[in-house]
Length: 435
Image 1: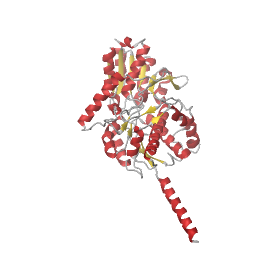
Image 2: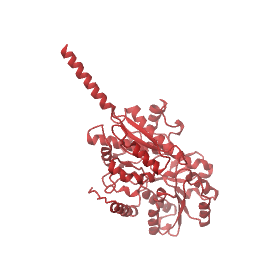
Image 3: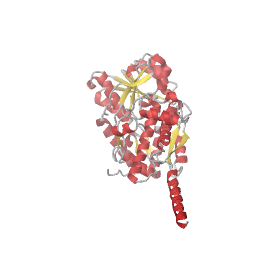
Image 4: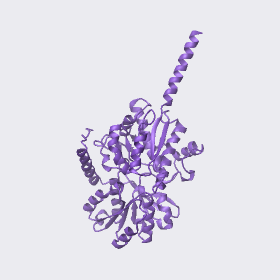
């Protein structure tokens, strides 16, 4: 009888301990904007991000058995509100916030100094401060798979190819229509350097928030007659710009938007007039991958989807989904490195810095051919820096990748990253790490 009680007690203790371990939740705040002028673009990203993480919970029990706790906070794409969301969620749950995806260059800039103090990584995927690619100076910020500066040089290369060679850029006129914010201004220095190198004329055309008034901008374009137009826009600004471009009959196949200006929301309002419009991309559009099937099966079939089922596979939905994938893979890597599922932000930073999602792993994740492999290091937080272009087919109402992935012009971006990160280190008393 005594032995039986002891056995039962031991079993109960083991069960309780097991239950305690399983109860540890991985807190992943989502800085959303489902309201305001940028909501049409913020909503699908947030849906893709949340649906992927909820799929991991339903299909796999989370990450290595530790469930993910999504903590949404509405920013309205407002920097002040974004910082408030960060402060209100960073100590959430047992783990505390493990990673932030601000989805705003303005918010990212404000969180960079906070991240090192709070020891929480910032994953500003393809946006934010470009020089954070230098992991020696910015150990808590990751902006892979490519930066705005890399993307700008890819656009220049594409234009050069279309003009018959880079030497033919000389004498051409390239305009940049940009959101008049830290975000929109990011590619300017890169394009200025490219203009110096290749001899094209570079025009800068700012558009004030939120971007609904652009008549004067496009009248200037009609008057100045640039050969190509690039756009760094977001939200309603994009669709207004595409309609205005169509109204002056600017050729859509010579109009290229940053990857945040290349969603269905941006082109559908212009109808057939948007046909041929181009944008940057680092993943495929559409829902034809096994990962989408799993999201439908484990999330939407259970009535748990955050959006409409028929919008799975839209560009910004897929962008949120891939952001969640890379974040969860960094957490998984952190668990492996530190030998525990009970990771915190400081561990997840190590996971990001050792991240290596190769072709084989993408296949295991149901994303073979969906996006590019990514490998991060202490020094390189940008990763591969590769960018492709996609084009809108108005008759099919879908985006299609129309190029291979280009390597960036590192002879332009490298010195700029070194210069800007060195200046940041000097101004903020940061001693670069020895990688």
